[in-house]
Image 1 (cartoon, protein in one colour):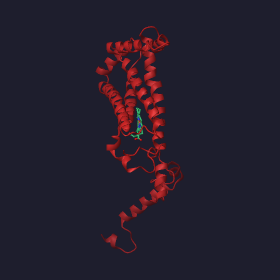
Image 2 (cartoon, protein in one colour):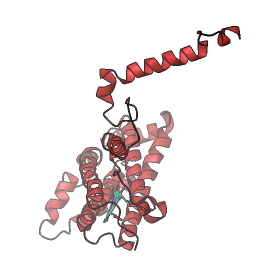
Image 3 (cartoon, rainbow, N blue to C red):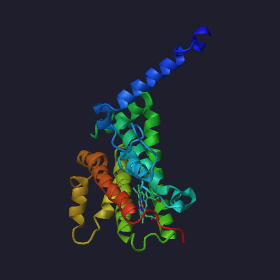
Image 4 (cartoon, rainbow, N blue to C red):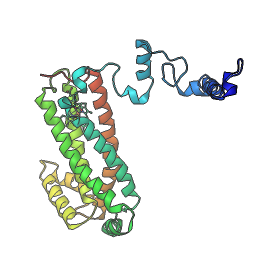
Length: 264
Ligand code: HEM
């Protein structure tokens, strides 16, 4: 009590506060800090809340930069987009994370595939849960992409200037369906085997190149271990790689076409 009221003597709490703020000032003006946080960052010293700095905050942050500096009021209304595009993207991320987990325990050979799935169910911590999350997310992604397309169609957002993005969307839909179908074979159970037999037989009726298409898809004249390896590589590597590129183009186009279309 006595120390706080003595003239010329600072209370301890004030002193500590001063030292803490000096330390934070020193850190925030250091070269290391400034090389991480760019001008305009709210973590950088000297940030003032001005329209220019607000723009800097958005443009200098990878995460914020996904959104434009200014957003139209209707575009942030969930009832307009139903966030179906965002939901499709979220499901894709979830599929990637759960898929990587599954890759640790699955071998794409005719001898090991099904037994690995059984082991996953019975002997691996969270194995059954993660496999089911992967399966459900795949079904949901097909559904959400379809609903997203229906929403875009309903709002006439396929019209100029967004016709190019609609075409990118059609490619994304095809890739989503291909990802779903290639994943279907991987458990190597009866359902998968016969679904792929039917699917590739249908592809065999393609005019002119039917047999060649079937041969390429099967990796031989009939379904077998080579088919499994082929579809595995398509499922875990090639199709995800291609879809990520098209998603990047899709999101970039949404921005370049002036953000989300207006209400009807
Ligand atoms: C993997 C699949 C897809 C993902 C992740 C995706 C993601 C997105 C996202 C996040 C948006 C922003 C607005 C919103 O959420 O609705 C969007 C807009 C759009 N998408 Fe997709 N999309 C996909 C498939 C499709 C398909 C299949 C089509 C059409 C065939 C399509 C056409 C469009 C168009 C035209 C826009 C602009 C809509 C507007 O301005 O109102 N997308 N997409």
